[in-house]
Length: 318
Length: 243
Image (tube, rainbow over all chains, first blue to last red; front, side, top):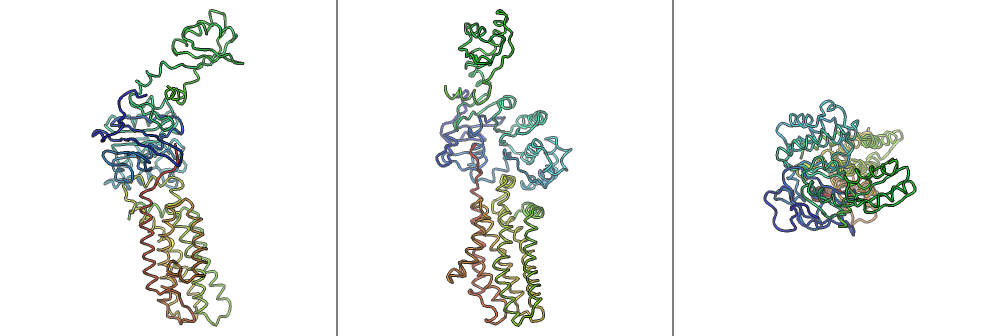
């Protein structure tokens, strides 16, 4: 399912594209990690979305030139990413792995990146990057003593120190607390507003919803949807939702609910009902009314299939 | 060479327990030489040359280079920090050369003085006959060749230490002693040839199986080939993980 036309199954690279995959596959022995994926993204924030093990990191690693595609090509600008260290003049990369040089201070870690990029004023660039992720207060402490969230932010600072036009981020919000997450999101939004291309992976729907204008949805190594996130969400609204419902009389409530036109089916369990409905909002309004009309006390009404994996598994099955 | 990578590697070594191990390793020949000097010796030249060949060149030198050479880049690849260097516009060649230079510098700083000091202790009271300077230069050349080999191993396999130990003890320590034809493929034999070229002792006291010039040329070839292969391997470096 493709919500908006961003897929390019084959052919020459789009001139405007900054990150492009053309019929890319990657397999490890008999295991296919990425299967014939094509996309083209430009300035703005694109979320690479999918359940754990879907192939998101593999795609990002190929985009960063750290994996050779078994088939197809990944291009950064007009050049293949594989064996192209020069592209890092224009690309910043944050990988999921937590490892950092624990003996360096935060500032030294970012300065290391600035020096490796050959910047003319690495000290000033490092200070600017540390300021951008609001880490000045901790910059003189050794990185080994940082929390996971602080390390994540520091890795972002090191990735943006040379002011790259393209940012590739693998699960950048892992381990960050809500405040750090919001702060990092602001930084990324600001960079996108300045015309940069940001591709970040996540398995958290909420993160992508908050940050990305466009998404690439990967399930089991395949690109199953791409384009504007809101358009994909609209396409998803007609799928059945599953609720867990507990009440003072589950059996009687089940009989009443199944008669409602928005309800597809009801399963009576030992302690709760499992209800499937096509109308998320309607059901949350109707169910309490039905219960009240029959003198039943509603104790719990929870949507249970809101995980990314179940939502996108549904998309794939369709 | 990239100066930032070079300085970073030196800092890494300064903080690693491997550096302490290296220091301990360097003390071994000195301690043995002191123990040796406690007794009476009629053939100091022969015994000291033999000690330097069998203990320093055969064991201490390759082990010191193994410890540092395999960790210079190998430990970063293993823990994932290598990406902070590799995801930068630094040519892989510069990275390898910087890692090589830092490892060789530290190895040489431990092994060469240990060779010279233990040699001087062993030869105390008699003329040097070029043995100390010969073995000091030979171990320096050996440091370069071995370090290049172990850096190549560290980018070629995640079990560099294991393969390195097998190489040192099985190939260099055993096979090249059993079959004379393998002397052209042995860094140890190159080193002994160079030491023999510089030392002026009689053949009864010390004689290598390989000429010194041949040893120097072959060590240079090994150094160059190992570094070129390491660069190529690093250019094709792939991250593991299938997510």
